[in-house]
Length: 270
Image (cartoon, rainbow, N blue to C red; front, side, top):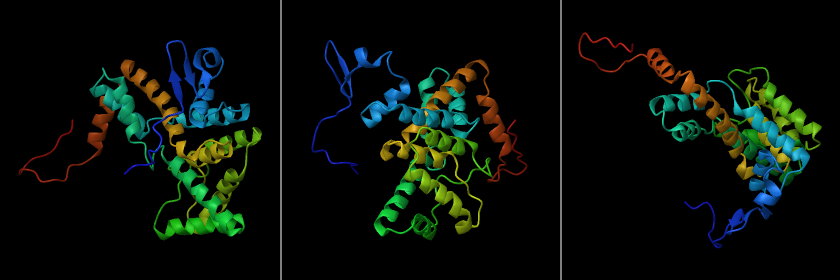
């Protein structure tokens, strides 16, 4: 299935000739290299214009917040892949990113879409925000769909990263309707579900970025970009302090075999 119409065979991100390279209308050499940060460049590439100081601060904060969180599945997959194929760092980075979906790293995109649903429901009905939140959560619960961006297996009471990101956005003067929506959900969700589900970092990221003017359809790219930096760090360490095979052996030892076997057979994963 195509994701868009192909009426125009053009692109508007970059072009070059023998003397110049142009990125989003700016000369790469004369106007960008050595003059802007990588965070500026990310915003320019994605949003089409250089960010304000406030927008830069918000995007930079989200990248810092989501880059690293220990031996999470993406890191484990990446380190184990490098252990098996030490010549292919690019493959190990890719292995770490390929599993980023609705549970790991991709939740920011889903939470952003959820917040947008609430915003649209509020606008369409003209009802108070709490009513719009209840309506959309009701839709999700009717089809047994989890509300993305809330709850965390480790940070039960609250996710400290989420609170700090919202503080940064408020300090930058960009807090708006999406943070308002995020906090309303945080307040109402426990009562609607009977569970103490509080905003996590994947809920805060879209709230602050959408209020800062970042495009909804590019939300998933932020945690992917941030985690890539962390994966490179883990892969560098894997080359000097390898644990990939240790993790593989630990995984095998943690799982029992309950399939068919010849009489007298005893599995030994050691």
